[in-house]
Structure formats: C-alpha cells, structure tokens
Amino acid sequence: MEAAITLGKMMAHSGIRLVYGGGNTGLMGTVARAVIDHGGLVTGIIPEFLKDREVMLKDADEMIVVPDMHTRKQLMFDKADAFVALPGGVGTLEELVEQLTWAQLGRHTKPILIADINGFWRPLLSLFGHMRETEFIRHGFDVTYLVAEKAEDIVPMLEAKAKLIPPHGMSERIAEKL
Image 1: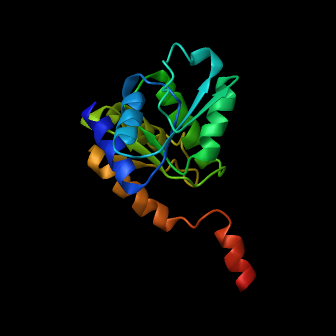
Image 2: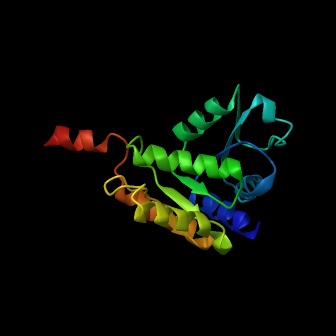
C-alpha cells in the first residue's frame, strides 16, 4: 500500500495522468486515490459488469464505462504512454504479459516497468531468464522491460526511458526534413 501511495503522489507531482481500470479497490484503487489526493488527473476505464464488483471510483476526472474487457484493455492501451505492473493477481499478470508480447511483436515501443516491490515479481523475472536460456525467448525476439525495486524509482525510470523514445510519428517527421 505504501508503494502505491508513493507512486500516486509522484505521478501527481510529475503531472502524469493515471490511466487504469477504474476500480476503487486494491493497489490500483490506492494509486488512483493518491493521484487525486495530490492534485493529479485520473482516467478510469471499467466494463459495465465490474462497476459494482470493483467499486467504480467516482472521483476520477474521467470515467469511461465500456461493454467488455477487450474494449477496456484496448482503450487503456490507446490512452497510456507507459505501463507499470505493481504486485497483483492473475489479471495484473495477464495484462503485463500481453503488453510484453505486443512489444516483442513490434506492436508498440511504450515503456513497460515491473515494480518488483519486496521481490514480488522475482519468480516471474527468473522465469523470463529461464525462457531465454532455453531459447523459448529467442535472440532477436527479446522481451524488454524495466524493473524498479522501490516505488520512488518508478517515475524517474519511466521519464528517463521516455526521453529515449521519439514521440509517435517523430521518425517520419525527421525523415521528411532530410
């Protein structure tokens, strides 16, 4: 919970809008409330069937209710500039692996950060290493991500990574000028 509050506070102070699943429970609900409490902006995207189960956050600046999980995930992807996986359950794991897969397949270059708070994701990181060693992640098809062990490192790491990635369409504009 402390890490979630720290992340939300840092996002708000850095002017980073939170785009997330729209619930008021769990670590992401804590991040969202911390962003709001510290003057930041929050966009929640929640499927109709989860409005009650995840206790939709009514204080969000923007709350988008969608018909299903596929629409939710696509819209979250479209609106996000980076992805952070805090410790979580199967849904968090599924969303993380999906973004890693899309990046591996060249569908996006948005930063992906695994918040390995208290070593939570260490078994998964070990599995990725095992997959590389056994060539199930082949050379040239690397899975790239950042790993932060402390919440205080998440925003600075994402900001540093974002400076290395040209804005969408930048390469075309540079090519046009040459």
